[in-house]
Length: 314
Image 1 (cartoon, one colour):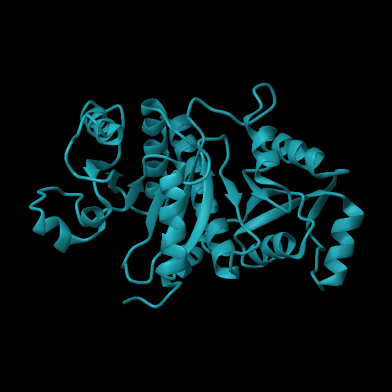
Image 2 (image 1 turned 120 degrees about the vertical axis):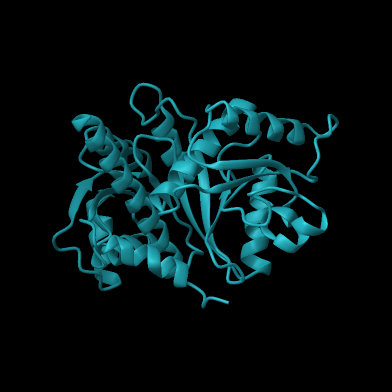
């Protein structure tokens, strides 16, 4: 078994070869969010632009002995204004990532999804947990456990494509995607099994690209080879899934928290599908989890930069 955090440490090490990513940090007005931005900057992962009440941020830095010299502060009177200004910095190209500070997720995401001034693209915005489960040799992506409550079939197509693109940025060129349900056979009375089958056919028709899909799969035969063999499931995904796609937010939230609290897993979080990757951290996150969230977003930003460069030269 790999020592805990080794997978996250590898992601952070990869970022050291990259230039720090300009990042708008929205309302970093508590110790956790301000320290998280400073620590990520000290490791060279990001170059923070601190957006919020200047006096409050500077007082907080003094209280906790955080050196803000060299970091830009954009003054904003309150959290709503900080969210709007952070999003504006991303729209203008001054920031290539967003990072949530000490404001409610709904405040930040409200500014992100606003039709006229937000960061929407043609993709559905979705959330992914990049989970370091000590008993597994690889990181596992769980999606969507935070944003899409009851995703439609079209939503799930976008959620899966977002997760596949994330896997590519993390260095997995052909991720194995398990579309989860309570069983591994299609049952018309269980809608998630029918949608799983449809999503696999969409991948066959190249409506979803870059990964290997299978579903429906129950959780045990998605991640455990022995369980898959016992049930005689012949699949390149069964027992070896890199991405777990859940039926809805409730299932995803329970899965992620079960892994965290019963399997001692850590969960780095990122929002995908917007113009820039968005780092969502919690005050309960460990230092390593906060840094891993930043590293994941930085690798996504780098992949987008490389993709844009190829498009220009093509």
